[in-house]
Image (cartoon, rainbow, N blue to C red):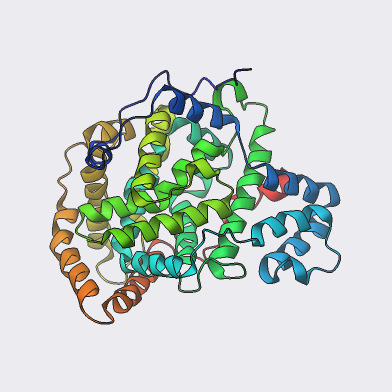
Length: 405
């Protein structure tokens, strides 16, 4: 029997920003065929069953009982929980069974490379992936119902950046590490949000599908790692094919930890671009929520923390971030987001020679990658402090949902 597809799914593949389309075509990729496109629509109704079942158990026994057990298992492994309840045991047993395809050395290399991107890599994640993602009207419906406007885009990106910094830390992604704990915690937050939003009286499943579904999660996954890397190439961050494929490997394992289905987990960098391109053709449907969410984010730099010449630097930061968005998303997306169309791409142009020099030095000089990663860590920490002087807690923006769902 044919699966019902939510009405948010477009009738045919949509245009995507020229830079992404051009990069995909250069790699020999094409728009999804009819079967692939229909599958993207069908996956709008598919969530993350193992986590959703665990969350239902947690609510059934009470959070005061279940949450400490979850946190213990997350920190020290399920073996550290004496006589664990079966739902908890089953969830962590699967999670701790590292897939045979995972290569720890490749994960370490990818994290090193991504740290080397420094603040420019995070700029691309913010100004292209997150801001451009507001064109996904279906995903916006979930965001708005979790209080995205009240919490603010600055807080949302700070939390996302903190998670990304954990994932690419030297600590790694294997069980018990910082990146692993943060990623599993994000997976749980997704389930809490699904439970909360789907129960709301104004949620229309026949129109929007399931909150934080597989298609949305796939787009978010590649948007977090593949899209910024692609943009980084355009900003002079030159990487050999082996490092690009290492980033795809880290993306694949991160997605596996997040509960993303196998068909959306990239096997190579080219495959990651394919997932990015295909999901964008299905999700880029801007509406009134697009401008509603984009406008505050554009002006966030005007509130950032600068110790010297704050007014000047805030205005400069706003212009710089807008120039990145304009350069990589193009005029059509800028119009959809309600942003100024005529913004010269001055910041990417200024950074290209700097990043080319840094890339060549890092690749050719002994110890260069390690020094680049250390510099990138410092830049990212500074950028995070610039955005907010408050402690950044992953999931803080939706913390109330745990109690209200």
